[in-house]
Structures are given as structure tokens and as C-alpha cells.
Image 1 (cartoon, rainbow, N blue to C red):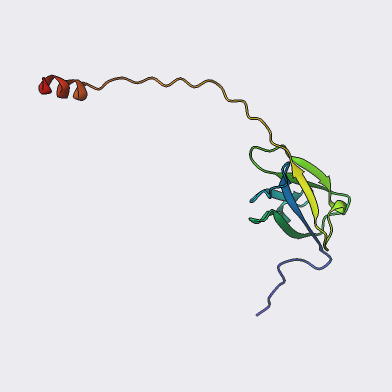
Image 2 (spheres, helix red, strand yellow):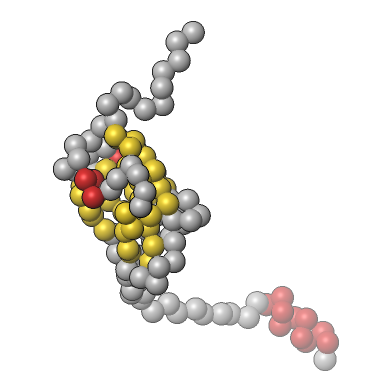
Length: 117
């Protein structure tokens, strides 16, 4: 039986940490090289991530999470050693349209009221 490694030879390791503007870690943010999105990952509960890719060090890395502005940084800004590169995501206000909720009394409810009186 032939077992293949999970990552190909020649792939570089990159790691970092994703936080908000208050320095709080952002869990489950998406981090991936634009040229190789399959090798991307999600941040852990402490905001850290680690992935391997064969993408060029001059490639862009996309970091995103719902409710935050997407960041695009160069892959060569990330390192495989400590200290971790910290990526800060800013909150992105989400404009919601007005929602109207209408209610209508059911006939069954009206019959119960008539029986009670």
C-alpha cells in the first residue's frame, strides 16, 4: 500500500494569528492563498492558523470572516516561525433593510374568545 503525504514536497508552511481591532482572537476566520484556495484553512479558537502551500511567496492571502472587512496581504508577510504575524480585521457595518412584520388573528382564536364569554 502506498501512502502519500498530506502536503506535496516543496510546499512552504505559513502561520499567523487573526484578531479584531481590540486584539481579541477571531475564531473560524477563513485564510487562503488566492492562487491556491484549496490549501487554505480556518483559524482555531485562539485565532491562530497554519497551512502549507506551493503558491508563490509573492501571492496574495485572503483573510475573511462574516461581519468583518476582508483583508488581502502578501504571503511573504507570513512566517513559519514565532513570533506569529498578526492580521487585524476591522468590523464591517452591515446595512439591513427595514423589515415589516404583520400579524392576523386566527378564526380559531376568535371562536375560543366567543365561547369563553
